[in-house]
Length: 194
Image (cartoon, rainbow, N blue to C red; front, side, top):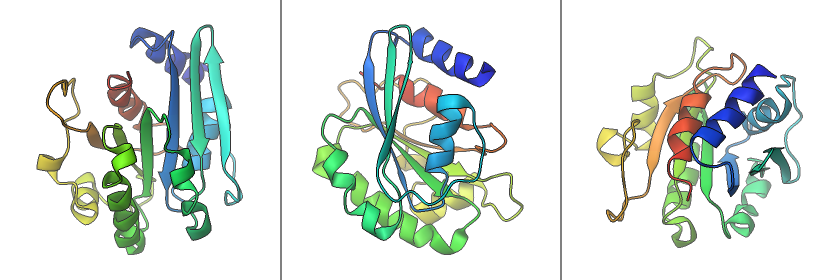
């Protein structure tokens, strides 16, 4: 439960203690969306079947309410992503950093999301997952293949985008199974949830 306590403490410290946030977990199938959702929900690490239907989990402690939607990533599931764009506060887009053969497909889906007017001002956290695997791409490689080189992202620190008409967008590398990296990404993203 340490990870959950840390996560909820982080949300409270960042001023999300009286807010409700709707966050979409998107990405191709087998990128780690369901694993991340369960890790945040109850620190359970287990093998999951491919997500057939959209699922959600409401994480709450005290006044913190955080609703995450795992919409699946197979081609049929991607057709319903648009149905969940209304009133979304952030998107977490996962990429399997070890599956380089699918980088072009992942880039295509990410580009479609980033160009959708309904998500124009929504913060995007890109998680390059599975860095614990020897075949995983480096952050520079992943950025290159998904078209997010340094000049196109916000920066990993506290960067104010108020009045700049810039969408918060950043890449963080992680390993959900090793419980590393995604905390930094959520910490970055939380500063942009209004």
